Length: 100
Image 1 (cartoon, rainbow, N blue to C red):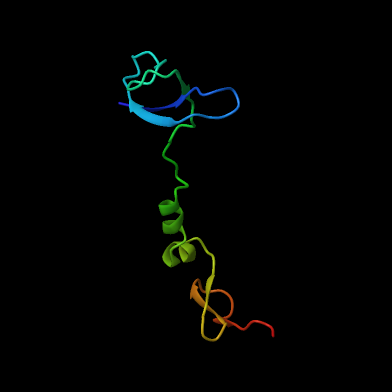
Image 2 (image 1 turned 90 degrees about the vertical axis):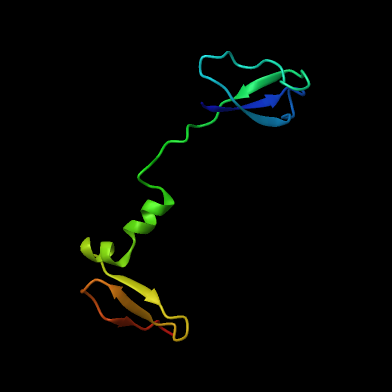
């Protein structure tokens, strides 16, 4: 069952307390708080849709083997020397030294 967000109607200028409630889609929207009876309104929120651009999917796409497979070269900075070492790909220098 979907979870809906409701907000207590305090006044026109300030938002009231919010709460979530699990309801069937067939049920009517609440008009009063289920515990204390204060008037409420439904808060419409963007849907939570699965996406191919989730943080985990992005992390997987940036793994060294996938970067190399796509034809890119990836460098990572060595914290001790400040140099960038090639960790994926075959093109370009194996090490880049920063100016300075």
